[in-house]
Length: 513
Ligand code: HEM
Image 1 (cartoon, rainbow, N blue to C red):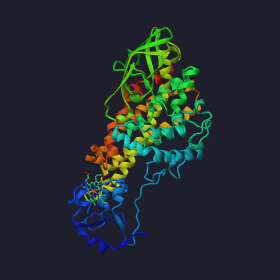
Image 2: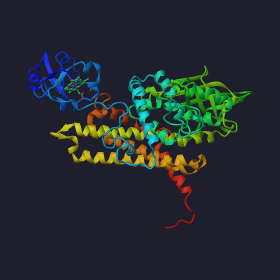
Image 3: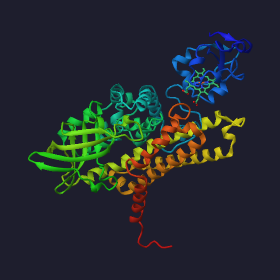
Image 4: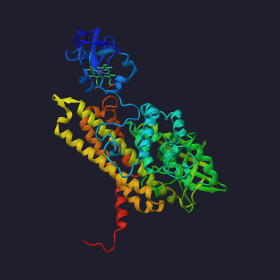
């Protein structure tokens, strides 16, 4: 039982050298801390704060996590008599009770045609895992820009999260997935959607890509088009988190116009000799393998290039965290055995295209999850921030912005879930034929919504939205990095155009008004 104080007792400690305040029923002794307070000592000595309950003032200026830091927890000397602490960080794995902070299938009372009890159990397990194991590293790496920690990769490999991120399929057979929370044969795209969602909830966009997005896009060509020997060697290393792989398609010469690439592979006996450069290669800075699109005599060919002295990687400074390992890659006559060819020589475009739908869908999942976090941040802030003597949400313009943000996220979510349901029920050929357009359009819609949500959130948070630490840090990260969602895996305008062109191809010739 902690020591209890009356309001009168607390009130006596209200000056330099002897300062107590109350936040959420806890009494803090700030006598020595006041001079070290990052917001300065003077703000603590005003009449309404010193010796008083400063809960509202505190939460108008600090995130709850400040009070969770050990150096500040130590300042608590007791509680206010007869009061209980009401504001607590949610335990790992908890579902938020803030409206629209969760997809509706997780909200008590709502029904879903797609998610089962098994999905719910899986979601709870994934959230707990990510919050306990991944979140601290996500925050640390996003900030420091350093490579994702190997211990986290090892733990993800142990429960087969790296393998699950490649979606349902034979590669999951015989694996124990998240301690048996899902069987390999029941694993579907909704399970994968859950993983993508949970990964994107920390306000750390660079880390989302750093934590092996390269494997999600770079390994499928090996799995689907590599020789049995190559697969037997590469796949276990990557799923085991021991080796890293990146997809190397784009160049300074060619982005959306993939066919403009200039990297060349020339056959010399049993080897390919590869010369050229690749740009914006996610995870490239620390990758061991590069799934590389090359020009060959008879068209384009995808070749798995292993890191060697002839492969040089240089970090590119992007607007998100260097922890993503974004690199400029140079192949300087890199010699690769012909056995590393993925698919048929000259048929590289097929190999590359086979990957695009899944990649675009994945980016849509993580983008949407990050947007939902922004909605939650804005609802909390609009409720706890007091302006002109009222909560921020008392302003109609703020409520209008919230309405727009919520509607965009819910629209995107419902579209994404419908696409995901169809991915679960279509053959690969049907998905290519019928879903390439909807996935492209859904991605461009969610990407555009990201820009609009970022703009609205910035108006709600004001100066805090352009400040890297403190109250608005999640909004700052989101606004700075949401363009990645609108560009990676297919730029917004290209996606829109692709979706419409796919639709026009299917226009019946006899359709008339
Ligand atoms: C337990 C008591 C407190 C602790 C441990 C604490 C700690 C901190 C910390 C760590 C920061 C840096 C910014 C951040 O990380 O969010 C900060 C900033 C600040 N604090 Fe406190 N603080 C306390 C109480 C208060 C109170 C009662 C006030 C009321 C006026 C206050 C006013 C400020 C201001 C004005 C800033 C600067 C905010 C900004 O830059 O936006 N602090 N405080």
